[in-house]
Length: 171
Image 1 (cartoon, helix red, strand yellow):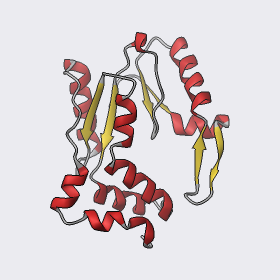
Image 2: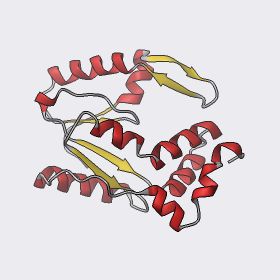
Image 3: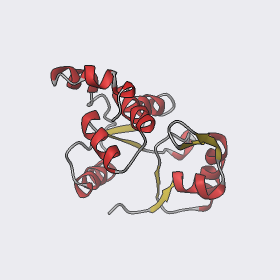
């Protein structure tokens, strides 16, 4: 278990109405990043304990606060299985898998922060991932990124073509 207050930003967006609209095709909300960013700044200004923000999108946190970003990654074929098991709609699975293949969240985070860590969660239990996060925080390791090259992995496994046409097939 990680020490600090856990805050699920997706849940807050739904509860507070920080949603621009519903993406009808993907059956998922489109988040108002300006509103949730302002909310996060308010939370930060009121708390003295460590905060753990959980989100599937990136919120810019002022550099003066020295935030640490940990981007959790998952091999795309495993991610597809996880999303299917959770009942995600076809379009949403396609968007998430391609965001993972193209390093979208990682690149977005690297665009405004140098303190970014990448953890490959493929095949790992949640407690093992938490242990990795704890080691990063405890030992203040140098930020590590670039460990997941999903295009190469998918090519090596002859899965890239399947993923290319993922959105065209019923999955």
